[in-house]
Image 1 (cartoon, rainbow, N blue to C red):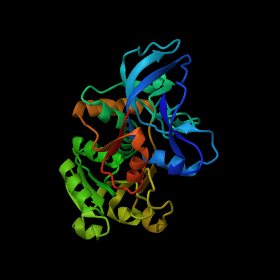
Image 2 (tube, rainbow, N blue to C red):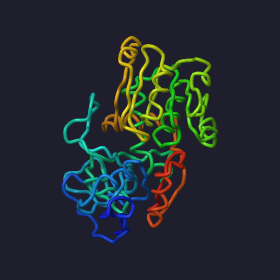
Image 3 (cartoon, one colour):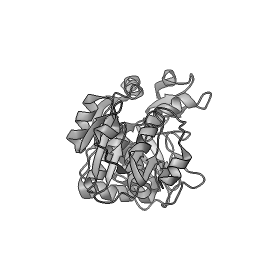
Length: 328
């Protein structure tokens, strides 16, 4: 089969499309013939953070058709159309991931290939209202968004949510989820094009990330901020939350380290919560939610695996609005 392999050197230069052996299926596992896959920031990060590792197939998101089942598998059969949960070894909802939690695509072989073998417990039926491209880009971002907004953020109908740095797959999902749940949503971006796209997607307000947020929001404070930018926006995000409000953070695309006035923080009774991915229980909850509201991923651009470098460049340059997809 063809697969996008990462070897040395570190970074995108180590990506190579190669012909490799089809993976073997063990007991409790299934082999999925992939139709589509989605590109995530994690796929870019692992290229830069790991060097001199054994070669591995990149990719966490994917959807396809089961072509082989291992001994003991009863929940699915050959021919089933499925979507893959990339979160490994986190079956039930909990305050934090259990020991042994990992993500498909490193160190285990991932989804940027014609076939992938995963535990039968990692697959769920493909939502009927999604086409193959939409299904293939859904899992990681949609799950991350669901846990951030509902499990950790505890969003309630009528609340006001602020989403700095709109454009990523996760943030576009959170925007759609929040509107479906009856919330008011304000987004920020330095890009006028992305602000316009967010308004078309349902955002109530879209403001310039480089501007004065308080002035742009007419002094209104929000109940909840979902932060994925990091140092570049964190202080503005904190300043935008009403007393007793919450910041949920799952990313740091523009700087890992922030400083806060701790006295101001505790007098304000603020909540600061971290999150990442989610459990398989939440994955099922997320699929039920998107079925109920017929939510679809925002597709930015679609590439083939032969064009992988172009796709990775687009993500690295933050040009995308929504999800980047691979057809396989």
